Image 1 (cartoon, rainbow, N blue to C red):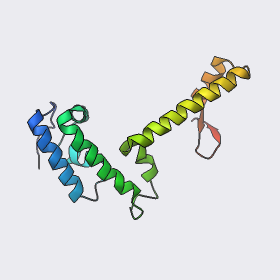
Image 2: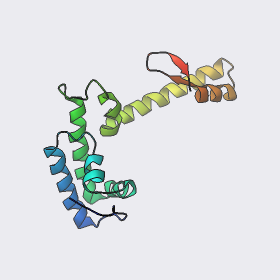
Image 3: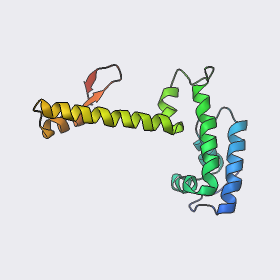
Length: 146
């Protein structure tokens, strides 16, 4: 286990590949881990800024993608202990295709809403007020932001 002060500099390419293999092995052998931060932050003491540099490096990226899919599958497993609690909240984190589809849907809905508002004579200021003060509660209802 690493000790001492957290790293502040991204490891070199050779070490990134070794770390990627280690991360995937660790994730596979620790089924209780439900987020990659269990490895990079708790086990390896990497701070967020270093982690963000690491996941952009081609030497590490493939291992990162694999580890994300391993963890993500735990949220989708019908026998998962978190499935009914928060699994739906993590799909955007672990599955880029879900994130992209949701973003496209929201963008499309925003364009339709803006067009309908313009046709109804709603001003941009009124739309901005609604965006800033009203939120969707997930049950086809809007509520005031608190």
